[in-house]
Image (cartoon, rainbow, N blue to C red; front, side):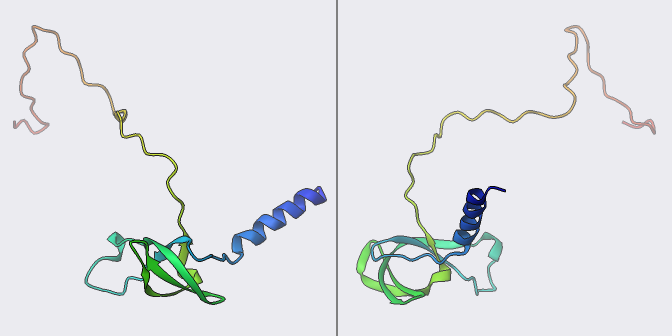
Length: 126
């Protein structure tokens, strides 16, 4: 393998596990840890946000705040509980959606003069 390509692959693998650093003012998602046993975890959201980064408390903890009220801190979170927030670039097209393809055999087309009768099952009852 070409040494340049190999080095590129190694860089990609390293960057996947690399620690992400945030600056004050960055927007992030906060991972929720569902503790409540009353509700199903399946239907609970995985993340909340976006929230603003206020300050770096230590190399791995950040203080966050709600964007509506950036003066009041919500709490301190570990780096592993934060994920980048990216602004949506385009709006979704909510126009016409094509119907799904129907499966199975198509229904029989009956001639105009045909009268439909009730079918009997194998035992002879209706």
